[in-house]
Image 1 (spheres, chains in turn brown, purple, green, blue):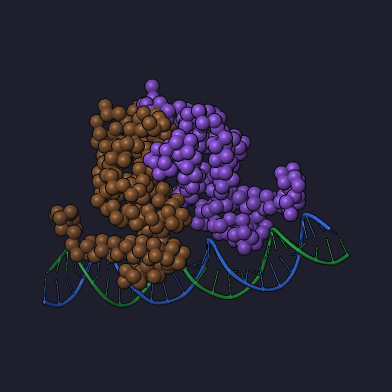
Image 2 (cartoon, rainbow over the protein chains, first blue to last red; image 1 turned 120 degrees about the vertical axis):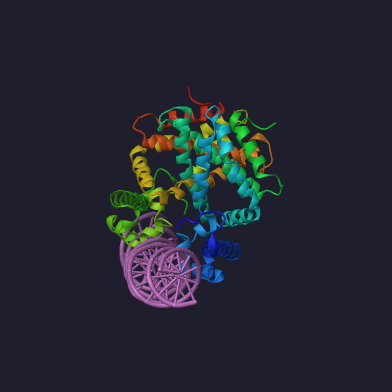
Length: 204
Length: 204
DNA sequence: TGCAAGCTTGCAGAGCCTGCAAAAATTCTT
DNA sequence: AAGAATTTTTGCAGGCTCTGCAAGCTTGCA
């Protein structure tokens, strides 16, 4: 137990698990992009990834999860980063810094995200799940913000800021993945946060 | 065809439909509040509303819809109100005015919404669907805003404002339905919009 | 009253998802 | 390197969700 370097020596088993998961995600996205969500069965996705249908559900709780992904790991990292930001940094700036890391990783997987966004917009039934992951994160973020600004956990401010910044992030990511311009996601997020801090003035 | 007074004389048929729908919603919320989402079947909900299970799916596309409701009608009204607001009104104020009507109706159904929020928070699988309805509305709202401020439909500003105000509304509604204080939803929404317009300054 | 339209219902069936236990693969121990 | 321990994969049975279809009933209207 406890392999001495847990990150450097993943071992064959972990490697295979990553491969299988990636294969399932790739097969799911490709097939659904081709045929549409309800013309692709879990059986077909599993066959394309060369595993049994039962194994699919060992990796994903439901069919949609293979398409939208689970962002629990991201959530933990964002929370850790947020708590690490010095208290004197303004709330919006702290949040912007907390998501920097995740944003870079998303940027690194641009093609995957473009495909994912394409699939989601063409299959609106997936939209709920794509937004939902964020909501769970927002609740946790709200708690950290409450402590940071020194108000009660049920004060309206933390929940508002968490929800609003989550929405801003989503808007920026959507634009980044769908628009033709090849700007960095980080730049789009910066613009969105700047607009928030300025009170959302009309452009120009 | 085309009943002369469509609103004043609903007729027995429409009345029955509304009753059936309300009975299904009530039964679904009550049963799920008691037992939890996956310990209640559509068959049981239908039985409690005294209709067949097949009829349930004539009213709702899926089990969850009976719990979170469909807000398409609200969406249409919000869009109509928004386009009716004079162009010189600032964007945030226009949005606030556009949702006033819907907010009053939600306020009128406070108990229903409290139960619904309780069910959703205790069954997080429902959370996606609750937020999703808003997203569809937001896209339409973004289009109207783009026209209002005179930018291209794919400009980042309209999408950002639509997403952010949607999030603010959601935060206010959540607080209104869960918190103990009996303040008006309209007041909470006003506060949220004011905070948005001020750039989300830390309280105090 | 009689007809047309709309609503409800049962039925059959595809597909999603879960629990269980056996088989296979990987890792650990000796 | 052989065997034990652990993890992963798989098949199977089964319940539940949701859909299409056709028959039967209710409602609205002339």
